[in-house]
Length: 510
Image (cartoon, rainbow, N blue to C red; front, side, top):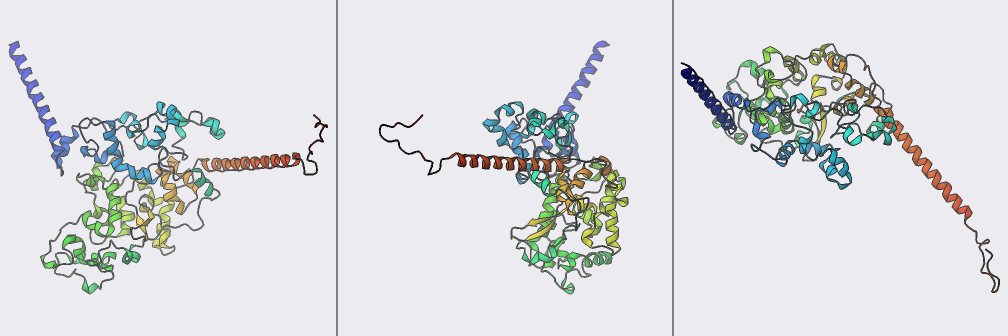
């Protein structure tokens, strides 16, 4: 009887083991599927060794994006990191580049922290030790190399090293928003700028100057009667009405502009392929930089990695239940046919996001600026919407050397480190000091900046003091040099006092 029981257990163990092996092989095999379905994604989830960071969790099932092989070297991993992040680090003039740690003059510090590879500080699948920006070192990691900073800067005496990067003063990589000269330059501005406003969108105005714009397919300012949006097309009257009210219709972008493949546009539309649901590939014909930003941002990075579009159900922030399974594409926010940018700037965000910050927008000072614009009491470029801060408008230089306003669709680009938002967004309306204080106040972040900052970050005062000290030191040095030069000049013998050669037989007195 006991022998039979043991055989059953051995049988179950064998079945269970073979099942696990089969699942493992199936999961590994699923990695080669360029268009994974639900089963592939479920199998891949078995391979995850741990929770990924906030920056990567959207693409954690695109395993091959980071893992070029089963057992990659540090160099292999570094190469995959740089394939996505090198351009950004170069653009911000990385404060701690690899060259700093390979410089023999820094060998002593490099021995303490060999930060020549990203994985020295950012190790994925380690949720227990992962902090903001995916850093897996202790929060006071700056002390490793800068423990004696107070000797060089007495103003830092007694400051905790956990405050270096979270008090709005320093960042490891990107300090373009807060380097000392920038702080000094923006000292003395109060809560508001004299002329608070954001850049106006101007694509329609400068579109004829862009060589990349498909003129033949979309001749600017085409007459409405020339549009191919006639009633013969398979769309309801509501769709036609929506389309005719858009900037697309006014700019000459016909229905075929989005619903016909790019290589068939300009030809015989009766023979063209009709795309029922256009994707970002169609949008990119005219909005390339915007689509690139979308694919690099939290909403679109899954598509770029070959995964199905992200849905709110997969987000880590609180989301509305009724939008949980909506696939995030260009038209999710902009809406097919109407493409209402005003709706996309606030209402669409609020239709999905259900966090405290989003819910507090309606009662915020920023929302009141939008109310004034809607009431005709203020100019359009003074409204502050969700998109104003999270998808900011920036000056963009095109390959044609034409500068235009670009809406940055990589909405995470200015969120981490958050102080980047001070320079790219807040300074359009507010002073730098107020912006730094507000971004450092967790209460204001939660209530959508409804109130004044409860704390003050003294980074500007410290930079100004250091600037004054440096100026005073330079002045003292110059004064000392002038004094020394004057003393040397007065001590030098004049021509009348120059000793003459002694007469022969009369030696020079000692």
